[in-house]
Image 1 (tube, helix red, strand yellow):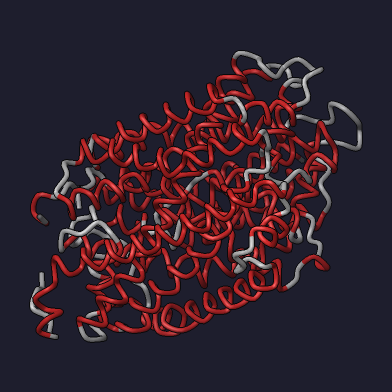
Image 2 (cartoon, chains in turn red, orange):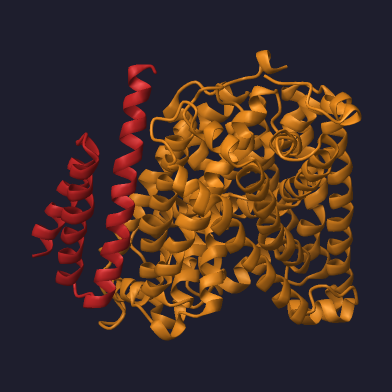
Length: 80
Length: 530
């Protein structure tokens, strides 16, 4: 369970980084990544409410990073 | 002057420098402590609320002010505020508003750096002492070790001096050749160290007692305690947002002034916020608390600000490879502090360059000397009085690091968003890859953000008045600061220094505006446009 969660989490945030569409980023980093982290934390023995709050906060921040930094890097690379 | 100003080389270099500016010591020791003591998981509700309604709007306002200022050749807050305020009021009124804002920015920059640079020196000293294993002997009391450190003139002055010289050297290299180059190296190191420490912390297991595990530490941090979620904890969340994003200091504007006139500021500002939040919530929330909980239990995480320098060294000596992990932790804090402090150095260097015509290379070292002189009482207090209360530092921090930021933030948002309005919205969106919606600007940035800040300021003022912070009686001062009564003169001196710096800040700021726009202030109409 912890490993499946970790793979989902890492996969979600990495795919969220490379995806171009903002909604795909949201689905990948926020939904899949957040769910993966929740599963990991639950498997490691965290309480349900703590894991839920932590995963929500982490999912939002990873989505926020995925939505802004790679877009800016791409603009930089294109020389605009 | 505008034509010869330095600019950022790449967008990613700019974002790393801006993130370095925002990510500071507070991300790693202040955030977990604030979250844990104000409701845990439920603290994140007012925290994110404040991020959207206060942090992001202020960040965008500051980027806008900075880019406008840079177009006219300014790197300091006073003329930047003047340029925006003159769009809504007469040039003479705009000059007063600009000088007031400049006064607070000058005070924050001068006084905050005076003690922030000392703490950076401590982190550097502790990195060295961790590597050499100075506190690894279990018979050493880490609390007393810290007291001995701040009372030892050799340690204090050597590491503080190294930090000041390194910062001056970085800033003397210019924006592209100095700040951007150093941030491009240091920020990736900070994130790598942070990630390594977070992985180590989360995978610690339960090395001392089965009920003390790193995961239980995360549980402690994230457990939503609704009863702790009060009006006061909401104010703490808003205060944390100010502190963590480095807004209300004038240093975001200073960095943004080196943008080109049509550079994107919306996406760049949002990227800065996202990288800061990554450092704070993801990394800051996953290092100190889980480590301290796993080794010291619930009592260990309640150490507050002493967590970094007193509690964690206890842990590092029990941890396999503790010397390396300890050095990594303190060096992470050093980088976080360093990349923020160079922004404050650059503010003073820009001021000396623009207002006094002093070359940047020399100006950076004059800045170091200035911060050394202003910071001397902070270094000398524990050495001369053989106390460890740090009363002078605490008094400066109470005003500069907590109160002035909010006042300056209010002035900034009122001038650009509320007073200038539509023009500011168009200016903000010029060259933007992602535009700020008009409804968001009109509802949130023009009205909700300033009201939110005004409420914070009002309640902070009431708290300060109740606590006796406005008193000038040394006996009252030591009582509210809870420090040794013999430190009364130190607290009073700090208070006098703050007032003197405010007065100097107002005069310098007004003169700076008058030097560039004296003619239009005299004639009462805008004459200079770029």
